[in-house]
Image 1 (spheres, rainbow, N blue to C red):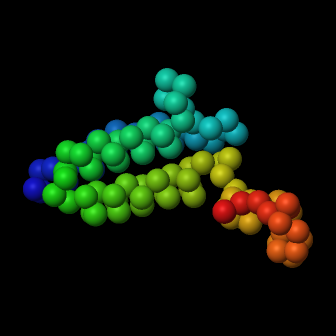
Image 2: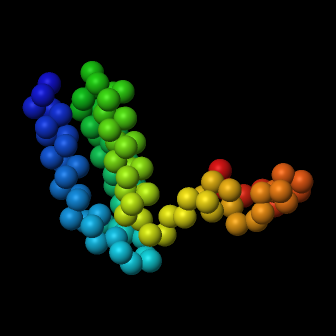
Image 3: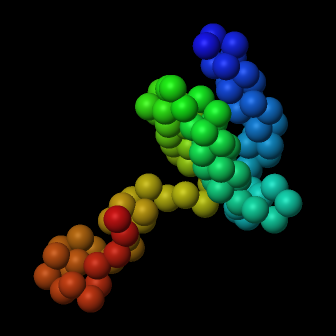
Length: 101
């Protein structure tokens, strides 16, 4: 059990050098695939491998994805993602202007 967790964390740490080069405006990719999708596929693989601890594996994966998006991805804008670029009052009044999450 403990060896599996250590193996999972070591696999995720292999991507740390790749994530650290995310200073440009172009989304980071590995072989043309954006790093978010690579991390998500690793989470799914780890859920399949560690099927007895799916909750903890998915929680760790979510935390890693959030840290990547919030701290390393310069193209991710939190207010635009959640509320969009139109003013919130206009979005509430006119449903055609609604954006974001």
